[in-house]
Every structure is written in structure tokens, then in C-alpha cells.
Amino acid sequence: MFPDAVKVFCGLMRVWNLFGDGRRFGRDEYLAYKEWLAKNVGACEYKLWTKLAVMKRKKATGFVGWVTYEMKDKESEWNKVTCMLARFAEYVNVGGNRTGGFGVVRLALKT
Image 1: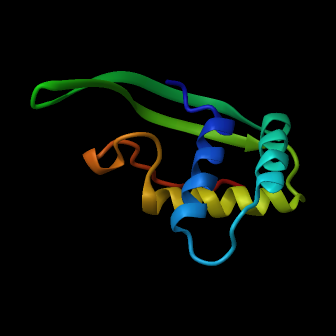
Image 2: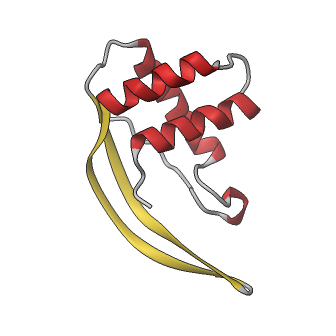
């Protein structure tokens, strides 16, 4: 359930390839990006709590809150891709059941 940067941004890259406009990422780029994320991006602060959502007969557990990600390698091309995907996340949201209102993202860049 924790919004691990590798899972979040790799998932966003897959959604970008399906629906994004323009540039597509190949398998080799995906694997290189995933490795870069694991080494350079992590959650440095967060406040999260779980929440139960009832949808007619179904129930789903998710979380509400915020996460701040920090990047070590600020000069890399992958840094620019990460910022682009973060902006894209505001538009498409992240995670499962996006049409149900889950995965809402609001981006706030800090320098």
C-alpha cells in the first residue's frame, strides 16, 4: 500500500505509453529507468492513513495523505522524465480503480 517511488513512477510510465502524447518508452528504457529510480528516488517524508471505501457491495482499503519524494541525481535526463510523469499523474491519477476516484494526485514541486 505504501506509494513506493519505483512502483508509482514505473506504473505512470506504462500508462504514459498507453495514452501519452508523443514519446514512447521502450523496454530497455523502462528497465534503465526502474534501476535509476531504485538508486535515486525515495520518500523522504509522508503522512498516510488507511481509509475504507464502500462501493455498493464491494469494499476497498486505500490510503489518504501525502508523500514527498526526493531525487539524488538532479542533473540526469531521468530526473526530467520523473518530473514529466509527476505532472502527468495529476491528469491521469495513479493506482487501481482510477475511474472510482482512487489515486488522485496533486503535484507541488519543491526546489
